Length: 108
Image 1 (cartoon, rainbow, N blue to C red):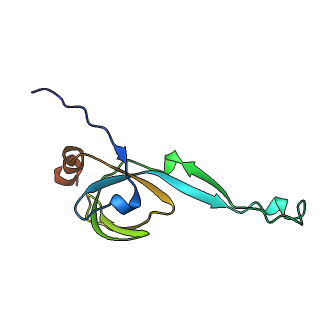
Image 2 (cartoon, rainbow, N blue to C red):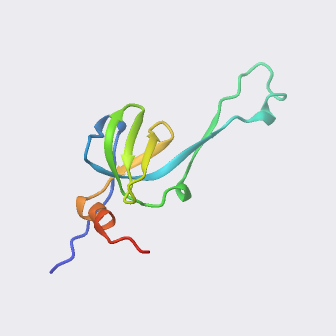
Image 3 (cartoon, one colour):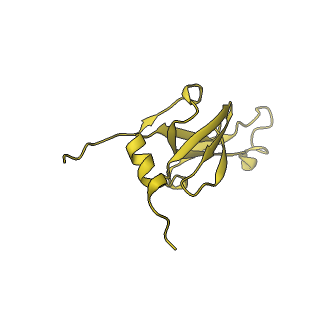
């Protein structure tokens, strides 16, 4: 049996569909630069946004319902999660990858 290589693909929120499998690949953190308020009274400081790759663990999720910007998804443990697509970057994964996590017997 030959091993087939699959690749995750970043997916736009409007392309999410019920039943597909996704993973969170990044969490966007947003901070307001409070130290800049005194230095630039004439300009309004913008929030600083940066992606955090450590916030993504690669756990596949099954999309249950999409109502942008929110997505309800189910993890392999059956837990329901609400994902805000404004702060999470999602990628689609192969059904084979996702089903490995969903069908593996639970330890304990």
